[in-house]
Length: 338
Image 1 (cartoon, helix red, strand yellow):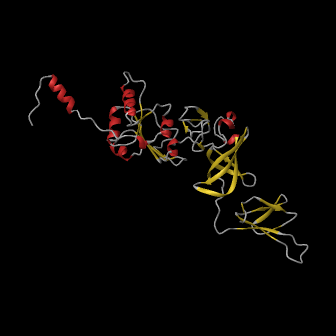
Image 2 (tube, one colour):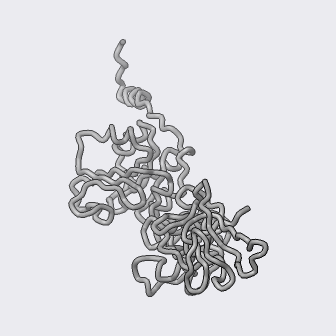
Image 3 (cartoon, helix red, strand yellow):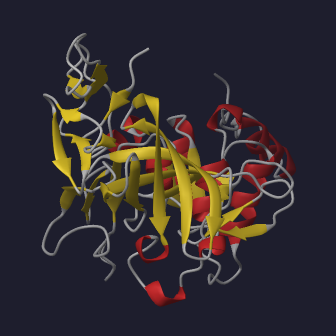
């Protein structure tokens, strides 16, 4: 099988070979100028002064080759205090056929507090990461970055050998042992679970999603591909709830039972500051019965990352007729004839 080479890759010493089509001479080496198959043409008989010629022939099928700006999936193979070395597995959704390696340098791990970054606290051998190609370094070795929120570790196993779930962009947790391990995690839990749209009702609160959306924008598509929009009030949330693949709500009884009536997968976050906190009691009871998932503001991302909506049980509304009959009997009231 012909060797596939990429632009900039050294092919042969210029002192021993002639440069053919698809190549150039740089720093005393013949280098590829295009993606294709490397071919060495031998000298002709009777031409003792002629040297073999190296050329690159573009193949009929364009190979999958990482380029600057591409988002790649890679596996960490080793780490040291300066960098993490990776093998590139896919460019976008396309698997690579040739072996391409890359490095994530300590200064390219994240965008903030770069001086505090530690490679061992960001990646471990065996982790699968989502990264962006910055540039071609040496031959077939690329400089990668995980500094954006939608980049980082997407799959990692804990010390116990269990796949972990992200709880923040700096930590992942083992669902079996509850042990927390440091990682530069892929921060967008919703995208990781396959959700493509986030719609928020914020009411009259002062909060607006400033960290998600540009100033004065109520809707936008993020770098991760997630489309985000928000509004304050609508006449009815029914249409939004009915169209939702997942509902995340406060734990008010009205909101809970409207979502359960529509049989939408539901995660509720009770307000712990309420007096005589019936929200917590209701959420815990319905979670025990298998109708919803309960979370807190601290573990919401972890709950969404680890939940299995297929395990939820449909909620059957109660029939108050029995209670009415008991009250009537206690009061000595006879049921009305039909």
